[in-house]
Image (cartoon, rainbow, N blue to C red; front, side, top):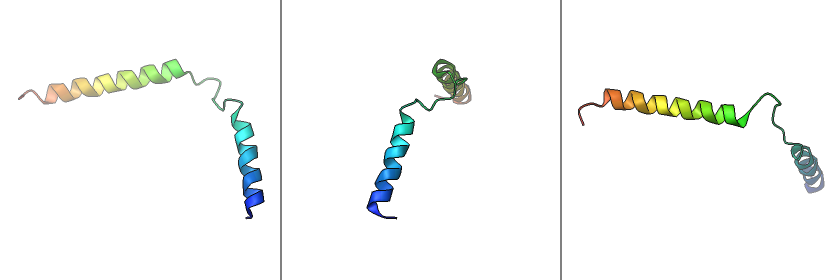
Length: 53
């Protein structure tokens, strides 16, 4: 590939990213909340198994 065609491909790729690219059913609040709950659950499990401290 030449530099010109590579640049053209990258420009067309960047133009497509302006639309957002997120799926309509993917909510950032649900994703963040799920990650938070998972991390809190892992923290709780870790503290239950580490009672000697």
